[in-house]
Every structure is written in C-alpha cells, then in structure tokens.
Length: 65
Image: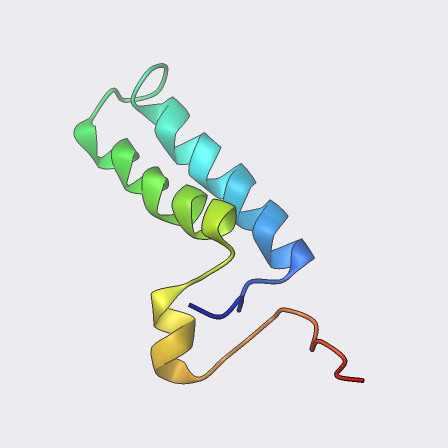
C-alpha cells in the first residue's frame, strides 16, 4: 500500500468521517452514519483504494536521492 492521501485530503476525510458518525448519535440516528468509518479509516491509513484503482494521488511525491 503506497501512500496516496495527502495532508489536506486527510483532514477533509477526518472531518467528514466524524460528522457522519456523529449523525448516528445526535442526528437522525440511522445506521447510515456509520459509513463515516470509510473516510475516517482511509485518512488514518493514508491510503484510499478508490484512488489506487483510478491511479490518483494527493500525497506529495517522495524525493529520491
């Protein structure tokens, strides 16, 4: 697994994930809010499987010396 989630993308995923999960506790209280685990986990792992399939990366390129 190569890192393909950048810093800004990571923070957006964390906020969106926490917001969706919070809907299960305070909002309409439906189980659909648990879908927020997906962006939260992809942010914490710095890897998005969909980005891998689409060959997209928001992570900075590592310099090789």
